[in-house]
Length: 143
Image (cartoon, rainbow, N blue to C red):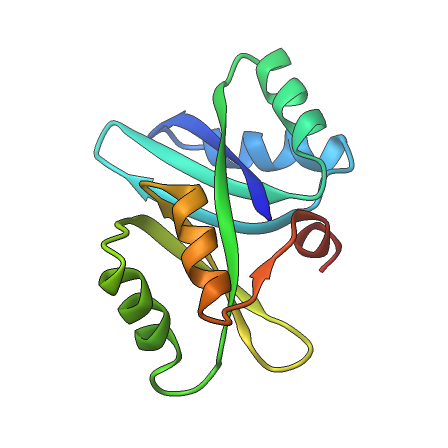
């Protein structure tokens, strides 16, 4: 139920983000979700892609500093309070959310949010025990 996320260190220079997108495009890799956090000198681009192994290889071959981390995709009711419910369950179990970003909306109408937890295995267990749908990696890759 864990999803592989690629994190790319990018210098904050014109064209660097475009270079990453072009490398992935030329390799036939589709970006499913992304988050970009930056400072004045650099940024961290986090991606969920349909082929993380190939993406890592292609980016490393082009001298980018990249790493792979595990995150969790959770289906969240797309209604007022949907996210609050998930966060309340996590808070009651004292599970810390390091960061999160929205993935999009599934055909069924619910949103998908990507979470990075301090204790990923415990978080998955708590969510499942509370009836929250944790989305499998292959499902996310196929969206």
